[in-house]
Amino acid sequence: MCYPRGEFLVGDSDVLLATLGDTPFYMSRSQFEYWKHTQIILDVVPGRGGMFSLEGPEGVRFLVRSRVFADEEIGALRAAGRI
Image (cartoon, rainbow, N blue to C red; front, top):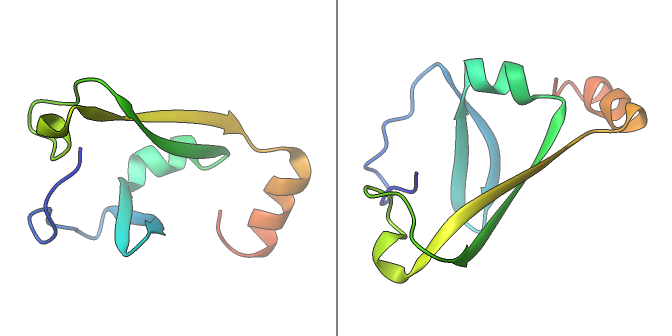
C-alpha cells in the first residue's frame, strides 16, 4: 500500500528496506525475516491498484517482483550486517 507522507505510522516492528527517491519503503519485521534472502523489485505498471492505496486513481499499480539472492550476495549482506 502507498500512503501519503505522514499518514502511515511507522513502529518498532517496521524495517526500513530502502528509500526510493525521497520516499521510505518499509516492511514489517516478521515479513522481513521471511523475505530477507530475497531481492524485492518494486515497479509501477498500468492497471488498478489497491482500493486504499494512493496510486489507485492514477490508473497505475505497484507490482512487486522478487528473486532469491545468490550465495555471494547473501555473504555480502551478512558481512555488511544487513541480515
